Picture 1 (tube, one colour):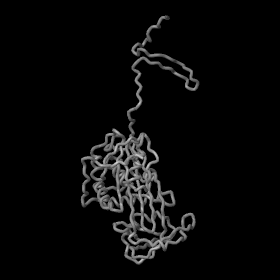
Picture 2 (picture 1 turned 180 degrees about the vertical axis):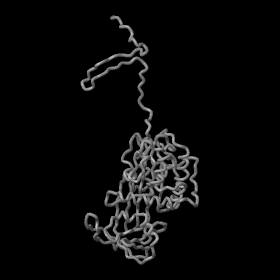
Picture 3 (picture 1 turned 180 degrees about the horizontal axis):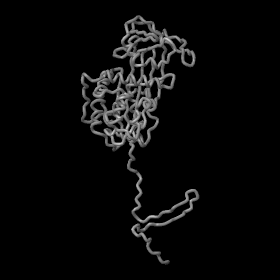
Picture 4 (picture 1 turned 90 degrees about the horizontal axis):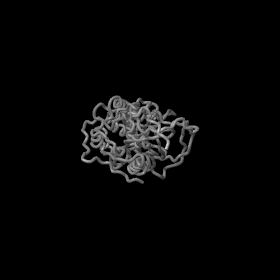
Length: 385
């Protein structure tokens, strides 16, 4: 396996974000995107990290202009000012002993990258540039970085990368946190769960504790805090068989937050352990993020002619009596819309031959040599020897 790179920026220190960084506005946009992705999920079990997705596109936004920048702001809900300061602040506040947030910039050897873009990534996202050879081991290097950053929960982000890839922006988030009120393992029993395809028997955990609880006309919610951190899982259960993705709607989540009150709760919930591999391009295009994937993309602040050719996320989550372990990694693969200089050069600057051939039969219709292109009369026939 390739060595895991340490991504640091030489000569540039990460800055402390201002106290008025627009975190709430960024959080609202991330919540909307997470709900929109859930609505478009095509699997029964589905997990994503809206924050990881947002980090990747926030870094791309640092080098975007024109309609590309406007679409990113509109779809992701980024504020007019202070986006990068907000993500800097989120990293510093969310990254604890239980949460790791890492960002990466991987470029093709020799690719010049905009100085202002690099400075923004260094000062707000804590990353520098790491040159790789995408034709040789680019995917391997990035996968090693993701594997290391997520404690092996995401073994690889990419199955393969095109040799034409010029640049990858990546984010990885890893969480491992115990419950403040752990479930008693001896009380876990196999019970029926009303799965979409019919009832199934699953290990159902049980907890009786003072927890924050809320209820609406067609839902109940309980907050499960993690020990030693400002983190909690909010479990939202429908009163009927409504689609669960509707429970992630921003208005409903806001109602949950407003309505939580301390309550003595008896809770039953299943263990679960699964992962998702998401092609982000189709859902993001359906939300209106299109220009960044098009040949006319304006990412000139990173490098002239770049466009995002692909965007993927892998995420996993394990929930048991002890707590939660989860990880996600997001990658934006960028190509250049402009042709690169050819690696193979043919220069017909000395006498050469040609043949005009019928390809299927191999028959030469015409054949000739060019010894002096300036002689338009073809020269005189050479006498026989």
